Image 1: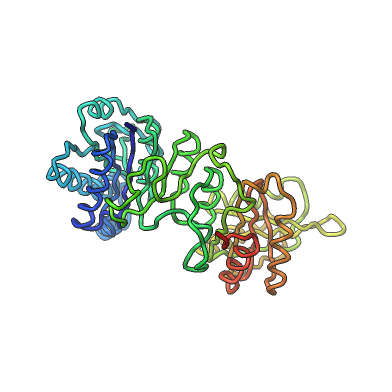
Image 2: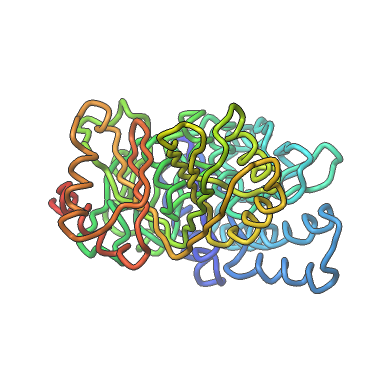
Length: 417
């Protein structure tokens, strides 16, 4: 017998028929003798509808009331799934975030989980009860509901799994696992059986949409073994109930991966923009003068390249931001020109960031050179490069995104079984 947390996203619970399919997945695990908690999202599209209603009621509104409204979507799903499970003869009860309780900080709309007391759920496990938990929410210090931000149900599931000391957290979604790259771009992309926490964190932060970044961070910190699997497969199909090797991708500690490839996957992010400050006075504190105000304005700066002039008197500073933040960033920089002390500012949109990821890079040389040569052979110009221990990110013109992804996927042998 194992203790499992199963999480189902919005598309998996979009209507009553899909909720019944989810219930069959839950029943399969219950029938196998496992203790089961389920974390659910709002039905597909409902959160957007609730947010729109808040904005229609008043463009400027109290964040606490926003949370009270937006959190209701998950409550409906949890109650409906509990009813369906009960109709199948399963002892099930729905739980709102404050009932457990899942305690958060006071940042309404983007709260962070601080503590979960799972004692009562564990007690009810002993009675054979399934807990159906409303995701995306918790209890703030002011005793009001607080939501965790978009995608927060993944975070709820991993946090609940950690609190319950679950053997595994299964994230059911509309894909059947984590692939070496986006199959819509490269049909030869392969589903991976195992990925390390570090690799998944890089992939999630660099454009892969399978898991929310915060949930991967939490899983890595608490060593929560996490499976990504499809909710649309037949719950009773052969192998679906195989505890040791279910279909999907296991996200786990690096020590559990026996054969580590040099490169695990290729991620990409479109709609990147580049901003360049020309002839900035080269002095101590210049970087802080530029990037401090941008951080205060909520602009997320990514790749940074600095070129110092031959005389050493000035420097060119180039960095990337999301395309949607270009106007805000340029406005901040122009307003602080006297403090930043630059001659000219240039910006360009329509760029893309391609990232090569793999824990095997730690012990292999020539990985970056292979990427650079392969892109050069395809006539793709590299605008900027950043690296870490397990990642190489390359900035290119957006029109070459798909070609670059396919080229790198092939050159590292990821299209081979």
